Amino acid sequence: MVHYFFKNLAIFIKAGIIFLFTIIIAKVASLTIDKNVKIITQKTKEKLSTSEITRLKLIQKLIIAAIYFIGTALALYQFPEVAKIGATMFASVAIVGLVFGIAAQPILGNMLAGIMIAFTRSIRLGDFIQVNGQIGEVEEITLIHTRIKTKENKRLIIPNKILAENKIFNFSVVDLNHPVEIFISIDRKIDLGKFKKDLKELLFKEGLIKSKKTIFINIENLSQETVTLKLLTLAKDYKEAKNLESNLKEKIFKEFKEKIIELRSEK
Image (cartoon, rainbow, N blue to C red; front, side):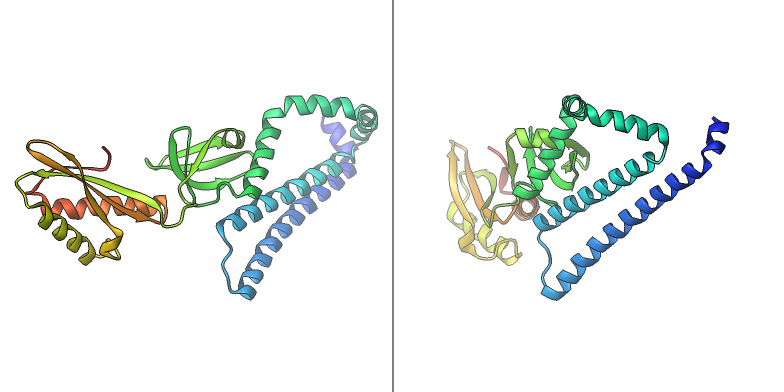
């Protein structure tokens, strides 16, 4: 092995130089893309949307991957043994391609799904989505997988093919129509009209609702001893809805804890 290395030292140096230039070109390409994005943003004075950022990052990764593939191939082709094998393999490239395609079907499927996700804008960086019962924020979209941060602050890695083949609920694509529902059970002896009025005034005063017209309080259920009210308001996305729900419950409980029998988010 040592003898082979010194015998072909010139070839190793040449291959090393090619691979070094490949790394430099890939780095320059990555920095150039980032720089051009900043220039475009400064000239237009507009921030890129999350969908545009997602597509640019994917294109950037595709370009870098292509540079490394070509550079590695050129470096290896400097060795006579590899060149001879390559000349033979070109004759059966169709068969090799077919075998590779079958063997790498899961990987290729994930790559195609990643490209489809980026260009169809079905999900974007920062979106809150639900897939296979899991809810979380999209942190990263790669060619192979998508990383999601769950409500428990865990990282869920999902192959892109699974995202493409399953139903996805994207809570971030809605506009001011994500419902926030809270159910409040109180004693029937309490003045219902006054309680609803005081509740609306409190939430408006605390800045939790912009207008008393944007919150609805209706009777959900009646029993001999209790009245269950359904408080409904709207948020622009899933993240804001969860924060608003938590703030509403905290403020309602703090102010009306002596009157409330039960306070919950779901029926």
